[in-house]
Length: 344
Ligand SMILES: Cc1ncc(C[n+]2csc(CCOP(=O)(O)OP(=O)(O)O)c2C)c(N)n1
Ligand SMILES: [Mg+2]
Image (cartoon, rainbow, N blue to C red; front, side, top):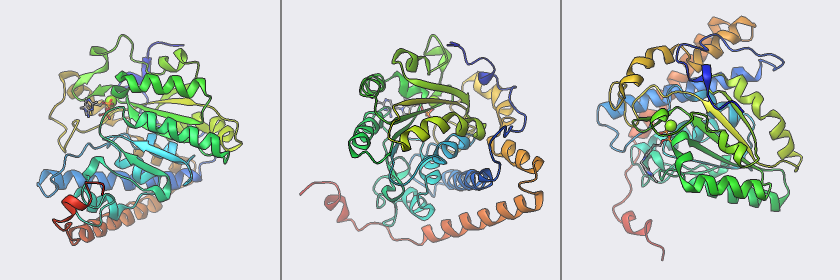
């Protein structure tokens, strides 16, 4: 395999609109809706982190929306997916409640973790998102367990783990890859390689910048794609998804190369960034996954500029309404500090 990301790591490359190839553009209109909704929701969260209205640490994935949505297009509510510290997009892409997310980051009782978890502890089991965990690498083995359950249940479901390039430096990642491969479990490993773990660029942490080389080591089917090209993300999983649904699929490793626009945690883009990141950021914004998809849909006649404007306006209204509602929600009663933490 190619041991380098080559142009995928080049901030000046892949700014062009997305090619649909043999893919039907129509489902990607809904995908664009999901991506814009995630972006507006995270922009709203960023604004409220900036003003101090949100008190919990928030790791935002603005710029990385295509990976979450492209994967979620293949998932169904009986799958079991797990995320990490940067999982608002995974949660929303799979259909988690916007009201529940907003209430949670505000610490309100109607939040998805009843206000006790914050941004990094999201769950929406009803849509197959079983939970996000901020301990880096911690939910990867749990997704493998979900894959084992799916294999035993024989209903064609899949266990899914969303994680970053930094998580591939945890022992739990390698043990999970090994077990999933040896047992041929239906598990989708989604590595969003944004080339940073906190403040350290991958070139300072790893001899090679391709995380999928570990899939080769574990004899696992894999693909490394432009994670800001939703059609590439979706296409890479088509065959694997068909095999899972037929009950014959094993593990698959998807590496989606992308870039986060904001700092590791919080709302600022000029904080906790290394020198190289600061220089690259404006170029990376040229690889915007949302703009590229919108332009492509316009080019093939699937979404006119007028329809796009209406979509954006409706989403902005939805986000503003959800935020206003979340602000009216009650905080948990102080007694919840004991009743929800300790097992009886
Ligand atoms: C076991 C563990 N070590 C360290 C941390 C602190 N930490 C939080 S996020 C992070 C970086 C993770 O990088 P990556 O997996 O690439 O995800 P990204 O932030 O890029 O989405 C670190 C080191 C942690 N939460 N858990
Ligand atoms: Mg990373």
